[in-house]
Image 1 (cartoon, rainbow, N blue to C red):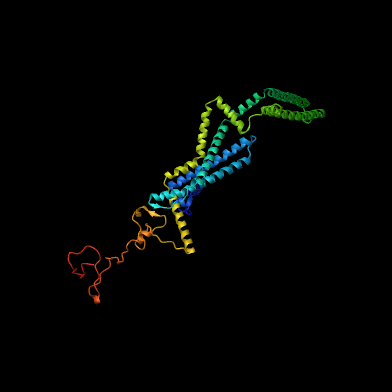
Image 2: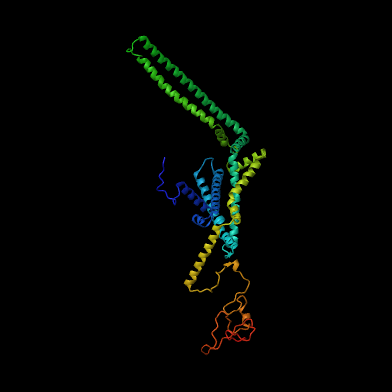
Length: 453
């Protein structure tokens, strides 16, 4: 089979590649970067790093959302799923993901880029100021991550051990309400027994009606055979009326039997729930373990009975904390990985701020003193310990009061690069020779200069 590729261009990637690029761009945004800029200035390795960062942040958001949703169902739920709790969990996860994207990922790029530029000899001013507010926010985020991480691990444990916790709760409820449990069990079982007897009686009546109806139909068949004629009437009007009556009675009894059978099945399925309902309706009943506190109490009791469960609880907690705090781990360790994107971001930021400053100074009519280098930028290869002279030749690094008392040399500076005028041209006096090493001869034969100043 041939494929027509005449309309396809190399500049247009295939559809599946476009989807991959779109997905990577989505994850790069979650990782704190700008997709177009990353692909322009950064190598593929850095694009892959930002993609992984975004994937980690997305996983953390989903974990936070599921943790909050599960905690709400355990704490204030009734055992059924509620869409409102899920929406609250999604909102909390999205808010935490947005804060991590700004505070843990994007905030680090300017400082990281400044460090990258300093390695190659370009020193920028301090871009990000480390204040107590930033430290406090990081500390609050750490506490939040610890709380959500522990709750997440706890929810995973409760979900994994839900059958055991439910059985323990039922046993403890029956033990705490032993007298009421015996009475409720007797009443519920008595109701099930009555329904069973009624269902058996209805089934017996249905079987009896089936036999009677089969007998009447067989008699009609024998009557037809005895007549020996196809034109003879197969039955009398009396037999037809009996058959119709039996069929109506059979249909009613069958429906009654089916209803009793469904009722019996429902009673058997709801036996424990009905017993619990009757126990809770008694005046001196001890309530059953429910909610998050009840789940924790049951889990504690199971851990005491089987100490091996403690190892799994600790393992779940460690895994949950590591996953929840993974954006913070990344933000603390990313300084050990070089980043061309961070360097470009810091440099572009400084250039933009410098342009804004110069434009503002121009509009305000302010003329700042010109310097050989831009403020705050120095190249390591151009650093010098020698003092910088000002226009008058004084040391600009020393106070002006010291420079006033220094003797001022009023002589014109020597300039050996200026060519000398010819001697005696138009009566002009030959210029003096500049300072330097004295000649061996008294006169310069070629130019006629004097040997002294």
